[in-house]
Image (cartoon, rainbow, N blue to C red; front, side):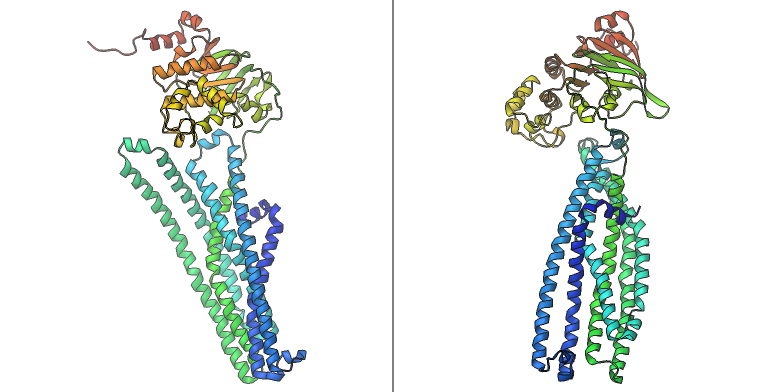
Length: 590
């Protein structure tokens, strides 16, 4: 993949703006070269007077010639300033626009990828692409693109003037140019892999930082601050070492280019001077050639810095476009259900996260509209995986899951997930206020509806007791609240969504008995008149379920009501005895 060509394709809707910005850059550089030509004209007037070049246009008075040159100089400088302003605004706004669109498109694309993709990626690595890499590209578009265009324009413009004034000197002076071009191409090829490694290590460093900041409580509890500081230091030093290799090569470019340009300048200085002594070259033309060689010197010495910036940005561009090119394994369906009754069937569902190691095998579960069913089983039996498949976080390998008789793979994700309210054991609250987190379930709800949902979740009283009530900021991931408080807010968030299907994934597994009782009361209230699927660890919370499915090693081994399953004396009865203290789960030697 050629990053610059891929970026050109991506920015196709902005091509007119790119062309405008390029034209402004070119015109600015032409105006930048023009003063040297006017200086040559002034020298020509002073030396040749009435026989100067301008005299050929009928301006025989020397003072008039100088006044005309002064006027032209003013116009040229004014135009140069105008075009500099124009290209500055054009390139900077273009850089900001493309940066914005790339970040939003990349983030939107990432959100469309299945959950399995995130299991293989680090949050810090993705953050490095969405933030650092996008910013790196923005820096190049803001300044580097204009520098490359102006350098090319300067070389061509100076070459044209040289050939007009003295083809021989032009040929001799521009002998180093192929060396410079070849060196630049060689430089970019050598720098490409180095900056790709730099960006990859930047992602690793970001990943480690994000991981540590997310687990700061664990680090402190194990007094591992110094160990983690050393780990970050090692990653940062690795980043520095990889950068050092790139710096070593990039720093050598400018001195080499400077020597090549010096050779061209010396040819102009010496050979041109000899031509003036011989009378075969005018003093004014000689002045223009010397000045233009100097004018060419500085942009080319900055070429190394510009190419360095270019290579950094292309390494970043490759990572961004690579992320955009990651194809989603799940495709959106086309069917919208106008109304959802809530009947769900799992028909011979088989699924494996890794080929050959099935998590679920031939699962058959039937849930009628407005029924409450529970799924229980030991850790790793596949309970949570069933919920992920229902929500289409992944697709079944065999069999089918249907909602109101329609395969969930045929439904639009918005229609499917919009009809399901999920309350998980792993509660995630966004940084913001209590009210904002509840409103996440339905952003257009009124404050009265927020309060009503909080009351239903038995959260209103503790929310009112917070320092700022519903306007209290909950902190990162809700860290300012207790586990039970976070869970009740998540229930209020599901309630305000008012979905026809409610999925409870071990919603009370990490709270105390008193909080569990409060949560259970609210869940019994909100589950009325809607289909409810409960994944339960504490069996006391599902005794009133219409039907209980018991999973063991990815298979349904028992189905029935609580009373029937306890009476049957099977797997469920064993779990019930353990939780109620009727079974001895450890032995003490006498």
